[in-house]
Image 1 (cartoon, each protein chain N blue to C red):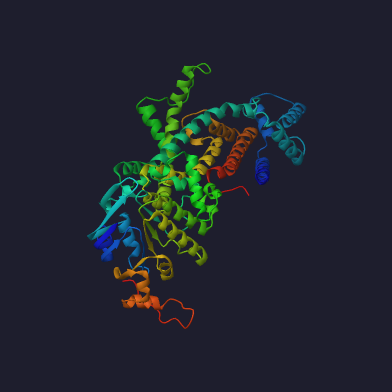
Image 2 (tube, one colour):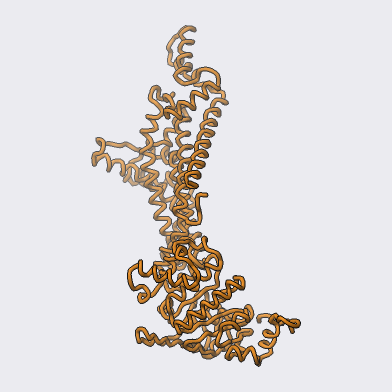
Length: 332
Length: 274
């Protein structure tokens, strides 16, 4: 009963957060001076088509209608929330008219998600493993070397690293492609190899940078845990190093890392702007970039709403499952 | 059982800071030995040297600590210096730490923490039979079976301390070392736990070493008492004798400082750890 009440309360908070974010998203672009209808009209005019005043008015009306910019601000707001909540419809993209925003997102999402999920998980597992060992045996040569590498990689600005990789491995040594071009029929072996081949450098660049951060944070956790009384007690029980590490240190060190991981997965829906621009990778980041450059209101709303919802969902999921991971946390 | 021969123990990897100074002591089979002394008198350090816990820079500078474990169950006799006791931990000897919130792993249920580290001989039977035996053992401490499925944070301080005593005693070792096992508890719980420890010792007929700065605790349960002061043993003997007829000035002061029902406390103990 308490559990149900907790979940219900958490869901209400979740819905409120999402609605609030959508509201901000709705009003902020409308505070700016650009009017997408006028911009569209100017675009049409610049292409040399001649229209008389009546035609322009008719077009203006029909554009306002399709863009959902009809009526007072409050009417628009009501219609906007209703449309998004009920049908998850962000309308047509303005820059790639008339493709619906949801379709663009649906096409870009697997790319971003595949790239970010695999690289984040690889970095997380590797980083935690190395961090745990180097925190446990800080004086061994291998952990010093690994930690040294992590500390050297960690502060490199991401865009420099990505550019460096790109220059080294696709320009000087032409091992990997410079831009992303995918070939092959759906679900064919050729397609899969092509995807892996094209995603390798962007994925590497993410793994390398994130890895260092995980190593440093887990190492700090492990070093602190090693001094804990329950670890000393386990040692005086005559337990083996492996057992102390796997049953006493690891579960306690990994808890905060799981929270971070969930937030990272939520943030994935932002795409990775720089990676995708640098490697010309067809994901969400590139989509957001295009939307900003083209002043594409609907696309911008769609992509940003998606990332807000994703982060809110990830946080909620973590809140809900955390008691399963840490017995000290309980749903009231 | 354990022979401590003119041992000097201290800390430091480059330098050396003496904590126990040429101490000689015997721990006999089937006895409860008390070690008393103020903070900094070296009792915990001596305890660690006897247990063989030479981590964090603890080392023996001179003298020896040797153990002789006669196991009637297997007929095996093991003799070794304490530096080689590690394989015997949670088999021939076990340890009760000073209770605090963080001695038990916060993410492990109590049952798993009792089982973790148990020697093979105490694990016999299936896991259900083992659980049954642990539950019965805990019942002797006034703890219900539900405690086995609890996490440490769900228990009170007194319950946690009883669990720690039970974990060490369930091993059924030849020697149990207890470092201030009842310090943080109120006197009622303290008395309960002490009586439990005596009862288990009488049943298992092993040796129990109890470190405490509380003379009242020693008076209640120990057979023999050792008084430490500034890293040295200043007095040792049967507990009743030490209390009735203290020889050393420090012991006299300690005993005189105990609160009395009639009359006022005789003296205050003056002494700081060197």
